[in-house]
Length: 260
Length: 267
Image (tube, rainbow over all chains, first blue to last red; front, top):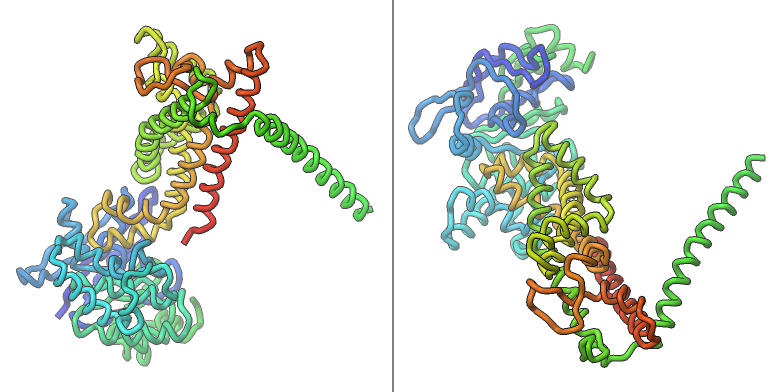
């Protein structure tokens, strides 16, 4: 069952005549990993950044079509592109978290980093806060490494640890969907391996969409793959079909490295 | 041929550096010799009326402190506006204005405050002096805040928004924290600058021979008194001016070094 349904979605950046995404229709399945692949400039990050409306940090973008998110509380599908009020956007971002290419630890302690989203959401009880932080750090596979230095600055962690901290921070607010924008492209192979394992572990609790340049990564961890090219969705299918048996010539060319 | 040109350029630049630095050394050495010669710890205990500098040093700090209390919040707020909220032409006009204000001659700012505050209120006052110093400080704080915030990566702001924080929370909790060291350094340097200013105070707060905390009257100022003392015919007054210059230089130096110390220990 899809947690998110993208329907005939088009996106235009401000000051540009032609849309950067055209007529995209794509489900994000519940408790699965959906990989978005394609050459640079194909619009995969633009699509990902539409799913939590992070584009709205900058004004003037144009959305068309629908992105329906299943609300687990009311069991209804709401079009997130209709949201206008700030507090509803905030709720959307609590439901749909995001992890960026470069690790983005906040300049505060490890504990405060993970607690940040919880505090913003209004959690004040100290015991509950520290329980949730501990659980999130365990979910982020970071607890063992940092449990004795939670009060230390997060800036002192290694790149891989920082990225897992960002994942823990996002997991802490218990989102329905997590968006990953090339989360390992700034990391070494060992850290990358740790994060890939973590993603597979996380999908028990959360649905994942990941943009990746690394096709091995997509084939290793994802259940579904969408191949995009120049703003169009070319092919979407189960990952094994995309990699072993693509229907479209362009998908096959890209997968086999003939362009990209 | 190229080797010779290289050598000539090297000699030329070393020579220029030596000339520049030797003037600086000359100033400092003169100041230290003349200043230390007249320096005595009793200067810190007596007011000017009794031949000391106590009221002037305290007065200068009060003026600069009040200026900072006015200038820092206003300057930071304006810097935050320009960098985080300002869009397009409006923000860039403010930025340009602030840059122009930064290079406005300090005597002009003093004259301005004289015209709009001293004349209407019927006399010089500590408030007028502090406001003149605040006007000097604001563009520097705007510029520092603006520049330091612009160095904070875009992703950090987006990461805060993506966790469900509103824009103002992201700015207050994350962005300013990330830029904290740079902003604090800039503010300290701005403070070091205004604490040594004379021209903006010359006809706004003037100075006073007595200890005073009354900001509605002429207010004791170290820099203005240096100017006055240096113009007096008696040797003793000029010696006192040297001692005051020495103390002022050491104060500015300490504040400057503190600022540098912050930058060096960034983490």
